[in-house]
Length: 174
Picture 1: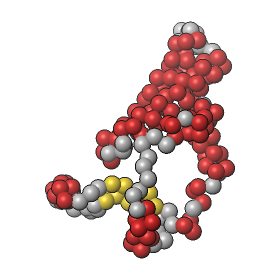
Picture 2: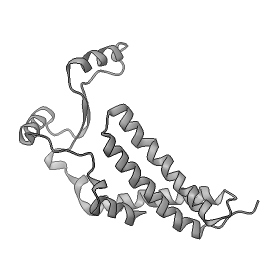
Picture 3: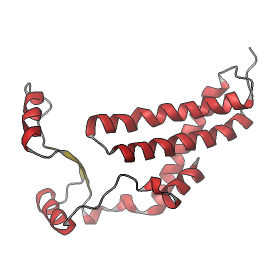
Picture 4: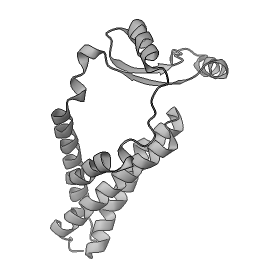
């Protein structure tokens, strides 16, 4: 699973599908630094207080006259999240936990054939790929090509993991 996602992000277009360069990036970065300063975070704009009883009305009105989006922002002095080795360790740990959960759930089934056991894990990949990625597309307007690329990466990763897990986890007796 980890090997596949590494290949997908490094050697295929899946890793950067849906991303675009900001036109006049220097001006945008300067404005962001001036406006946000040293406070890292995930910013949603235009902002409407979710506790406001008229939040939906205000958001619809702002949507008619303003652009909208999400901005993940880290100031230059807080770029610890971009160091490659800690990112790879975290990604491996996440995928290892995913594979352990898949193996545990597979162990609870009575699926006998290798292909059906591998397919069970692959279907978990479909579920996990849809769970977050489709919601980001629906609610936050993530680009469809980005969403599809992430879903493919997740599904193939779980399908590959399923091949290994199905070989290791033996079926339960009915």
